[in-house]
Length: 313
Length: 257
Image (cartoon, rainbow over all chains, first blue to last red; front, side, top):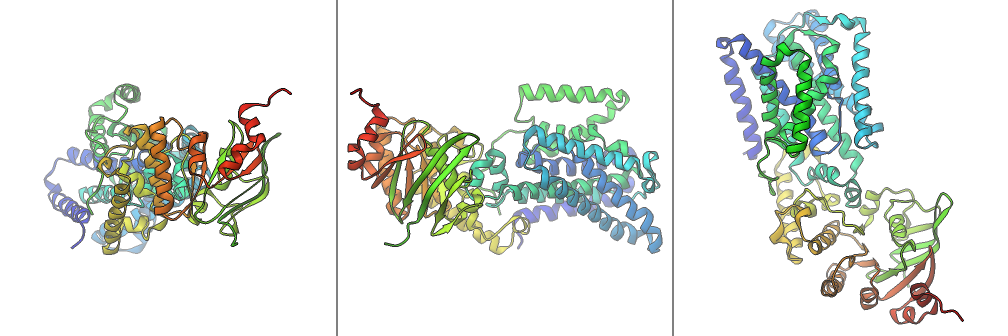
């Protein structure tokens, strides 16, 4: 019998499967928003591991997402037709493989950017990760093989409810599992006091790099899902605003809170829809929300109790 | 006589032009309780930070169990068996009392991030055992009743004790206590002296104690080293140190003759 947490994961996957089977009868607009919310959960939960639980302020999540999006899209668009696989085989085998590949490449990028810069703290780390995100964007804008600034078109629509909410369930489980163990409490210890953590024998650099790699892996997976949901990729979609959007979800939900961040991710995705006509003025609203929140509820909107002491297996 | 547990040999550290600690030799034997005293700014905490790898000495060597510790990171030194507390308490403030101690078992874990995800039978068995051991340790110090409180919400005295308990969870051979009596009233200080004695016997470890409070140091230490302006000016039993004119001068000032 697997432990309770894994039974929950299996149940969530099964539910996603069943609901996905009925997606043919659902409204296309509703489906689009729902899948967007699933992707937002993946993004916010994974950033929560870095910014919330481990206390490393990263502003580069959109960059990792871009790496995953382009990697995965290139695999299905460039490699897919050459394989000559049947359509179901492409959606159920090539597509998840491309998601994994995108995630892995993002994780490698996470290691490459994390290893040298995690010695920096607070604002400095934020600036380095911000710079990283911009570099990725500019690189993509100048790479002709991926459509440069014109964008990458013709990405097949493989993303469905199962893949988005399956990925969301796996992400939430992974982040929950990582921090809920004696080893995993080390992430929180690093966030609380690095010097004390070192003195207790914790290799703080290793913790930070682990958080960074796992976080960027799932950001990469989210990017792949996003690419195959929209069918079109443009480097400018992975800019600073996108990173901020994810940060807002984490802060709104409460840094280091699992459920709160999920609720915030869904809420912000849904709220965005009526705000779409405002265009870039949306960002003003975001900034306002952030400022008001930081003053009135720094612990997050959706946090109602303190961390539980002893977690179930 | 066998080699001492901790041996500092003519250790010097300079910060730019300032020599904070100069040619200090200190040794701590197995199971010994040694005090380190001196006026403000004498270099006591700096010495601690060199032993625990926060600073690297400019000159001289530090050896633990006869092996030099130069170049080791703080967490590697803790892994060798040296644990410490901090002058201004450094708990994990947002973690519960229970988790503060549980995290400190880190060095003795058989699981890591991968096992936290697979959560197999062995992992769960180890977690159960760790929870039991954390409970036992907290029970000894009567802190288990506060297990679900965030560490930052504890009263000052309990925070000090919790920090010691957390250090013990790393299962050290040598415990470094940096001014554990700071901010305590006389009754609490008496309690603390008992506690330190108790820990030394119960856990069979050596203790190096930095302290300002003469009563505490004189009361429990077997040997005392006295620092002033980064130099060692005296060493001996409490009685010898108390009678040493240099020590008296350092603490009370010299008389004009």
